[in-house]
Length: 144
Image (cartoon, rainbow, N blue to C red):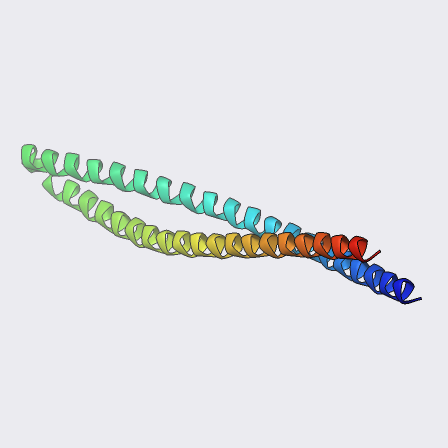
């Protein structure tokens, strides 16, 4: 009778553990989905950052060419100075946008790191639960 009660308790514990394991699996899947979404967002931010950097390089080259032309062509000086001012404003705007994207990139990287830590923690919990279930099963078999 005692073995029957212990067996029933063990079955209940195994069912509870199975539910917990299923819940952990669902949580892990959700965290993986979140991690994937954050990674996609991060890739988009990185792409925008690279595009901004390329635009900055191109604008810097344009500015240098404008300055050289200004020195060579005195009669077009007024027009070229206006172009330089426009390019500088655009460069400043792109620099500000680049800074914003850098902040977003850092935030996304931190969020990814947090998700990775959650996934790691859940994996450890799952492994611990499995080890406990195996140990309980072994003890139960020994008691029989």
